[in-house]
Image (cartoon, rainbow, N blue to C red; front, side):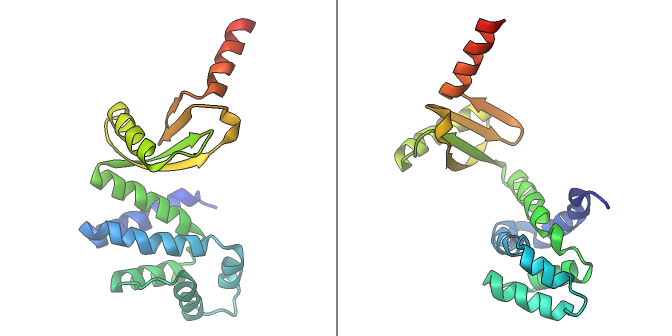
Length: 176
């Protein structure tokens, strides 16, 4: 079976070209559809030979609770008709990468030992945008095992200033 990313790429690129400058609003409904498509029970229903494409489409739209524009309806029907519902979450991820590239931004995950309030996050955002040289869409995840500090992941770049990382560095230095 082909790699899911390979299957998803042409769908994500075609949708990105079809929506043009409306990528931000398309991203909203695509994220909702991708979340629904990630559900195992829904995919099991879609894989049932007794379920028609129209039934799967209607269920997807009802569960996603989003108003699909005409190009969104056509896109979802195409994905269902081609049996690519399992690839929809990956299509959403690849579409988001294309959208971020168009906007000159990147998604970033900030792992912190403690919750970060809004003002501290705004200050941190400014510092990180200077460090990485682009606008960042920050998402914070609390990870208590870091002990203190933060760990930032932007694509394949990692900035780790956590206490845990420093302790690991000291351990390596002492055992070398």
